[in-house]
Amino acid sequence: MKINSEDELRPRATDVPFVSVVIPVLNSERTLKKCLESVFNQDYPKDEYEVILIDGGSNDGTLEIAKEFPLRIVTELQRGRGKAYDRGIVEAAGEAVAFLDSDAYADPSWLRDTSLELSKNHLMAIVYCGSMAPSDASFLQKCIDALNYKGEGRANGVLYRTDVFLKTKGFDERLNYLQENELEYRIARMGYRINNIRNVLVWHYPRDSLKRYFEQNMDVGIGKILFYRITKDSKILFNVIANSAAALLPVMFLLFDVVYVFAALLVLNLAYAMYVARETHSEYRKLKYILTVPFMNYLSIIGEFAGYMKALFVRNPHDE
Image (cartoon, rainbow, N blue to C red; front, side):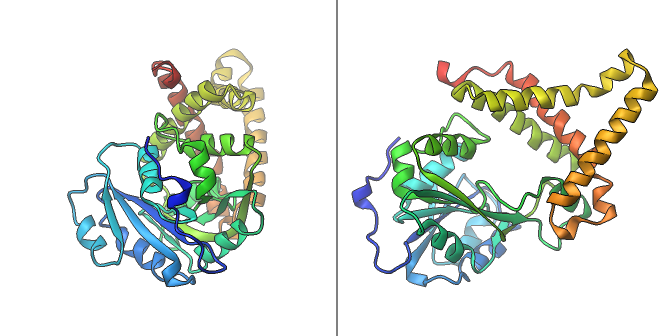
């Protein structure tokens, strides 16, 4: 993979780093305008950031919307999130690179706050920020967000130091999910620091149907298996085993006394709902959201388990 050398990066002209904002798009006409408006309304020096759209071959009105803004459009027809992200780095001129999904929008302080955090220490390589469903999200989307909200983000809204990214040779393009986790794993092993700004700086819509949410978790499951094959990290294996055991809990009804198993499941679900109520955003500490936690959690677990099973038929990417 060809990547710019560090000498090609734009030299720092002010106290803030020049940032390249990379937004992958594919038929994103429904959400792109709001996304771009948020990016071009950042509380950040206008001449200290650029915006690059990585288009995967959109055939709707995505590109027409993009041309309304002072940005650069790059076409990358090879599919896969890792490929789009790496192409963004190839095209970037910034000392730092920020990634934002096309169906998300950013708080005006997004670039300022993440860049300030990145500048605090020369070993700081990655800065994540909080992500939350917008106020106009559907009830289902908010139920999903109530379960998954942890006050921090991953690929969506993340800021990387470009020189560190270059040293890693970028995302593993053979992964189509959790590639940011695998990159973080390598960067941490190099001795660099990673931080999370818990402030909500990015607003992102979760999946809008149970089917799509299940499919997303299948992708997570496949990603975890491939991630483990690459890293051999025992923590990932333990997580896979624990989730698999949880997915198979209903089988216990066939093996043990139904009353005792039901009581155990009830206690576990209540305990987990209380945990989520404590950890989730205050907006979601309402009974109508917390009551959905057991169902949404189990749906995500069986989705991941289905992904594990599917991954048994996926070749180890390092054998190719």
